[in-house]
Image (cartoon, rainbow, N blue to C red; front, top):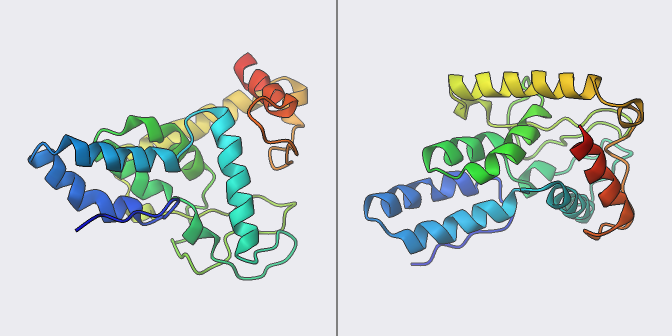
Length: 193
């Protein structure tokens, strides 16, 4: 029987956990490699990939009839990878390449909101994103890493040049090609930090 995996499925880490355990136990490296490549494709590993993933997310959200300017219910959480389960999978099965993006997404999540793919996870566009996660899957060490990472991001942001502090990360680039001037400028700003 073949393992069918959908792109950006928030349940993928839960679905592949057993298969990865068997692949590890029986040294089925080709199975592990196929699953890891799929997982890595769901999580950006560079700033340019982050912006491309964000554009894909916006497009997918629009296709689910979600609108930024209203509180219409949408199932946005069900079309984007879930960070807590991805983090646990990464630590348990040695997939460190997805950790930066997964922790960054987790840092933006509302830790008081339980995971619920059927609820609308965003407030109005002018307000902060309200992502959620499967918080119960995290270990104490994951919480410590998250806390240190959030502190580091706040410190980095506060020490950044003023033009970076006034930058609206939710503002679209328009031209989302990797070599676009907008993405190059964003990359240069982050590299300068």
